[in-house]
Image (cartoon, rainbow, N blue to C red):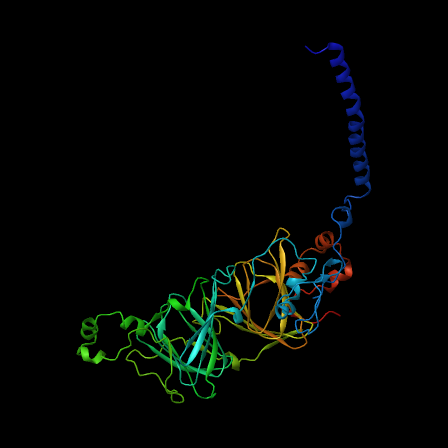
Length: 448
């Protein structure tokens, strides 16, 4: 058993230690009460008393993507010079990967894929290469194909289980289609124009000879698992139907099919289509909503640091699962800090050089560099920006797996939040609050 005298001493000692603490708490309560009588609002602690202020380091890219100099893998006091052989060309193109800004932290999935690394499928008359989750696992909602057709060459009659959106990169392309009501469609799209085919709608693509080299275009699909090698194609199907069944279906003799291909054609050479060729007439007429949109003829909306052309069902009615914008950003300007509440973003860089930092919450952020032919992907809700880091105009496609183009701008959000809340969060002053713009900027010009 415990010694009674020892136990009594222990209790008395505990009381003596607790008394000053109680007195201190009591004194604090009186002090707070007295203070509140003088002012009904207590001042918040400064940010320096709760969290250390962020570094003043600007964190510009350590070198230009176009440098020809030997680069040092160093950012300030961090890093060390490389001393073993490396792919210097790739290193130069990715300064923010090799010498990342000190604001990068944690882990974010790879948000960059260059088409230059995609396997190319070569055919007589053209080629095709693709990006999907096999090479870019982060891009779960969208995939793409870059396709080239020589003048006259045909991407054969086919359909997909996903929707197909496209933009012509060079030359002119004739597209044809028939919908479920037997209504027809045919049109010629030129550089900068779009087309869209809903899931299951058959179509064909053929290069004109308006440009002697033919055409090249970018296809985007609303499923990251899409594979161009799993397309439903006319010649693949007919090669796998008994000829007796083909003859019965078309009410002709089997000899009519003596020359059908034994496997898919996919891309094949042909004579260029006649100029302005019309679709065959149909007893049910033409499709009510065109499958093409002449974006090249739409004037861009000017912005403080660039311009934008938006395409969504309000102007391109049939395209209701892939929408977006063609954005230009001048040197030193940037697509402002923002995020998309529910939509993933898929970007393709058409000209210039850029960098983008993805903020994935919980102190996870990573910066990527981009140039012509690169693809970027941003999951829903991830904060990001796109900054022009080169000395020429940056142009890129910003696409969404959605029927609406929408985002939340950091600046507009802060401008429309009670000023004291903003100041208490960020430690900024009244001049910063006054400078905030209540109108979404989209692209902002260079820093003053």
